[in-house]
Amino acid sequence: MDKIRHKLKGWKERNLSFLGTGVLIRAVIQAIPTYVMSVFLIPQGICDKIEQAICRFWWGGNEEKRKIHWKNKETLFKPKQQGGQDFRTMRSFNEDLLAKKIWRLHQNPDSLLARCLKAKYYSHTNVLKARLGHRPSFVWRSIFHATWVIQKGGCWKIGNGSNINVWEDKWLPQQHGFKILKQHEQHTSNLLVKDLRNEQGTWNLPLLNNLLFPFERDLILQIPLIKEEMTYTFMWMLTKDGNYTVKSGYNAIREWHYNQEQGPSNMISNKAAWKKLWDLKQYPDAKISCGESLMTTFQPEWLS
Image 1 (cartoon, helix red, strand yellow):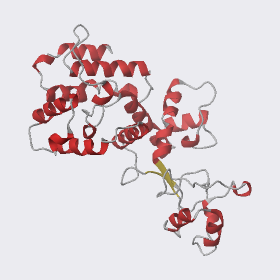
Image 2 (image 1 turned 45 degrees about the vertical axis):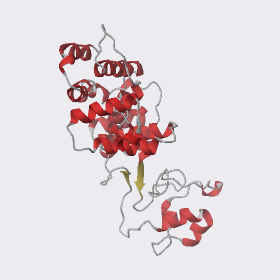
Image 3 (image 1 turned 60 degrees about the horizontal axis):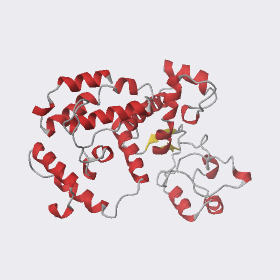
Image 4 (image 1 turned 45 degrees about the horizontal axis):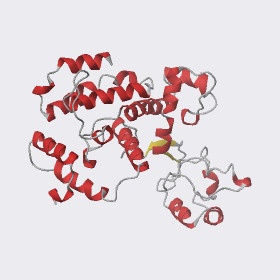
């Protein structure tokens, strides 16, 4: 916070345009805590203070002189297509960077950090199925907090299916949530994906009909089977190559957050109007100034 206050006091915000203010916020202010947030889960109070400092700077105020904030903080940190300025939410970005650590630990299990954490916290399983443990360090507690991001947006590539549980693991790519919805019976609780194949190496259709819903059976039949023996791998389903990226992770976290909120009935039309605004062939200053005017009294018909 001291570094952020020092940066804000050193700038003459009254001489900056909206575009210049936005560039400084994204390139400098939000970059200051990046290294710390990639290792530790910073307190929510610090996240709120950083965001409040950003809002004061955006609206032309400071700690000594306050000015009117024409829109609340939540609106300002929304994507531009939803009427905001697309500033990064500190807690979501913090979880995103920590999720990148989880991904690296899973993809590089032979690294020194991965071997140390595995020996202490998840010696008999992988990092995606690890538990917090007894008296964990603050580093592990922080990294463990972001496990849900990888689990929610990831899916197993089955390979030979020898280590993937049919009911508990996520392995159905085209299914919402990537998991089987039907509840298993007690005698099939330990059923593996490899058990759904027959001796010829194809899907066992009678068994699928007996165990699953018809629509889940159809989705499974669309999964191609590879005759060669392949180990199972974990894929991030929100990128084309299946690898986790900070950008895709942050966008996913924000989208999940906004989907949990109840929006107005005209959200879709508003989103189309904002997109039309940002696609205008005008100078960035003009588009941002126009956006600020629309943020106070939004009229979708203005762009129709």
